[in-house]
Image (cartoon, rainbow, N blue to C red; front, side, top):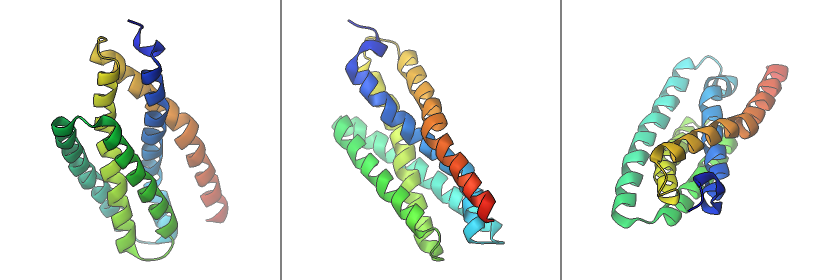
Length: 169
């Protein structure tokens, strides 16, 4: 059997996982700056939105793990979580400047639920794809892809957003 890095199924799962995790890390890193830009003087809101992301992420991890354990539907669950991620990110981006905090909390919760839930699912899926290999190999590959995803996708977006916020505010 070919090593994990040479199998197409493994290589196809790395870039989406890396970009997903990288976007999540960039969002969490810039959460304070984005929220304070739109809600001046409301520093407590940032902590509450972060708490919403964390609690929803814990729920997403537990629920997706239980679902995955019972159904073994990796691809379908991945697709649903990716759709939730896109909806959450689009909703968060589109509603952050509207002044309605309840919408921001809901979209942040969707982001936390779907992305953090997918991080667990991604590791399980990678272990299944690289089966004869040790779990260390798949975990290492996924962690590496997250760092590359942060550098390429999330990092570039973060630098662009910081320069935009720096020039405007």
